[in-house]
Image (cartoon, rainbow, N blue to C red; front, top):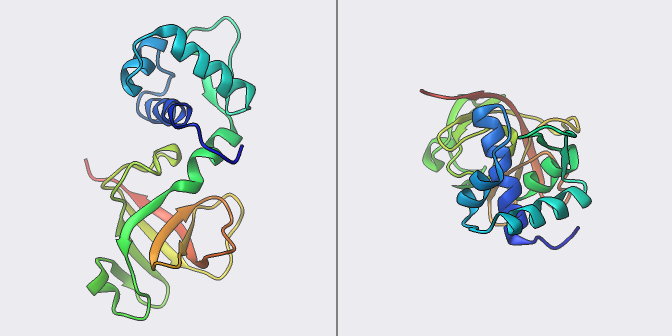
Length: 172
């Protein structure tokens, strides 16, 4: 699916966040409340379409049995983008990035909800290891044409690979 249906995307994103926080799927009413839908039948319709597209699966005869498939997480992940401006030729400190070891790693803070499917929340600090290659299952960090950092599991050959996320720190 190349075009995103905004409501279905929001439903999937809500389920991913709920699963990450609670460890089990939300009810139909909780999904509706979370994405601004009042009719349970509308929520059921979106869930059915997401299931047909292969983004969700449901355990038979189990309430709260929705799980997000691997393709569902891939559907969520490619749009993850930080709001951090970075010119890699400048000193990292001036861009809001803290170098750990200027030759090997740096750390920056995730500012938005775009990585919630990867269990990364706003305020989490990502440690990025510089690399020219990364494994398919790793979160990769790219620099796009506007010098923003983009974090994605999906390969983005149009952007320059900076490295991969090697650790995540969360303060409670």
